[in-house]
Image (cartoon, rainbow, N blue to C red):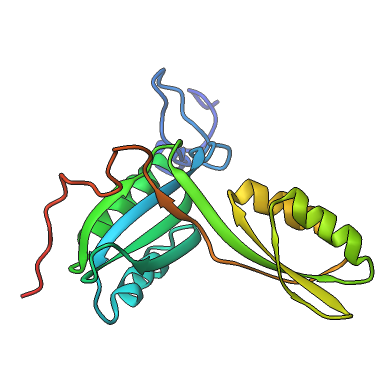
Length: 206
């Protein structure tokens, strides 16, 4: 007759996986929720030099950040350019993105813009011209401008928030949309607030 409880020996038992919460209860890693994500607009001021966009975009690729759009253009200072990055990440992911950007040599300043910042996109939408009067009416509704027209198609230019452009494209789909191209977001802080983070140490190219 055997004594004690039946079952595997201690060294044969499976080790539970997963971390414990504040109450000490172990959490199954397969059911643990992913951290919530949010949309962030980050303004990056860089030295205007060849290859700077390649360096920054290469960082996103290596680190596998979720980038919605990336735009770059000159600023009021010919020696500098501004990159506007729109990302959908968790708060830790956004913090990591900003830290990695600040490590890049051409980067002068990195700043996440507040929700009330001015955000604008430009889109070109090529629409079937079977009903030109109706297309023109929709274009007027969204303050769009006709930039090209022929018997088969009408191309309109729309500027505004991403929500406005998405709504306009959806409305034009009733006529048949052939092609769409969008610039991505350009953004500036409102009022007297600076779009540049003045607390970021400026990099120098030696």
